[in-house]
Amino acid sequence: MFLALQGPELEPVLKNLPEIIKQASQSQLGILALLSIVLFGLAIYFFRSAPMALRAFIFLVFFGGVVAYGWEINRVASKPESKHYTGRIVDRATTTPIHEARVTVSAGSNHAGPYRSDSEGDFSFWLARKNPSEDADVHIEHESYRAYDRTVSSDQKTQLGDIRLEPLLASTAGTPQEPSATSPADSKAPQPQPINRPAATRAPASERPGGLAGRVVSPTIRNEIHPYHSAAATLERATAAPPPRIVENSSGQKLSGKGKDWSPWYEVRVGAAPAGFTLQNAEFWLTGDRACGSWAECKEVAKNDNEVVWSFRLQGHDEWGAPPQAYSEGHLKVLYALK
Image 1 (spheres, one colour):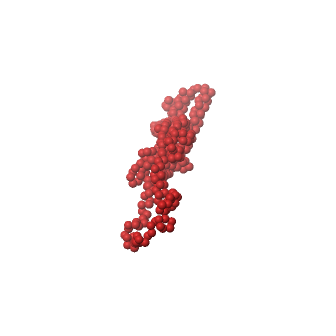
Image 2 (spheres, rainbow, N blue to C red):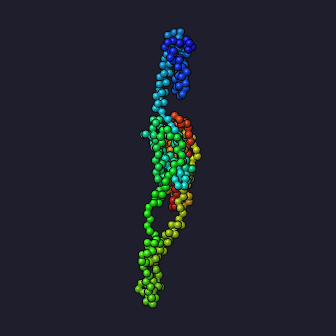
Image 3 (cartoon, rainbow, N blue to C red):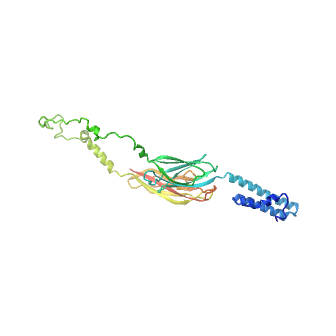
């Protein structure tokens, strides 16, 4: 076939044909372009003696193929490339895993998260870049630790390693302390001396004005005279009260939809409140591939003393480099207070 197509105008193409095939095989679109060229050559070879109407039809077919090829190039050019980043969040001093830390990611005008670290401190996220050389900013926060910021460049490895957060209490370690009551400075100061009165000069309680001997004292008066009685009673009641109850439940790993499709709705449920307690607060989040509000929808279904229910659904991936489907897990934490 190629011998029949030989000519001065095709000689450079035929000479560089092995290199053209090699370069075209580096990508899916290159292979598609190579197949179009081969089919075009076959059409010329087999239909060179066909009637004009048939050759016009073949031309229109190949013209449609070129248009489709150009449309695909534009679609791929606007399609972002995604990479999967993973890491672990730990305490700087003890290297203990930190769970429920919030991870927010931003690249240009795209913002995703917050993602959450799991019970092992692990977190992960897919980062889609419209510009392959664009850097991304990662912000990590936790109520017990200092906020952490990091820039992730486009050529950085997807394994972020251990991220060590500094506890908030560590910031007060270097503050000066007030001298204690037993410090040497205080031991040199003059101490007040107790006043000893002769016992004979003190009248019996029954003879002193306002004496309480033989009188019935109301609780109000007794508390005014001995305020530590009411303070001790209050402290006793506070320590006797049971602490708030926390109930947690998870959905397990759930599969997203495929590509741009959504998964079915999944549910996470916590039953009735413990006896004597009432609902105070409920919190829901996702770990794994998706986060609420970032290619995942999360909504509250019920929130009362009888049950707390959240539902969520997950969208798949259609960007380059990401699998069409991935897993996420829903977590529900409910706080109950004493009635």
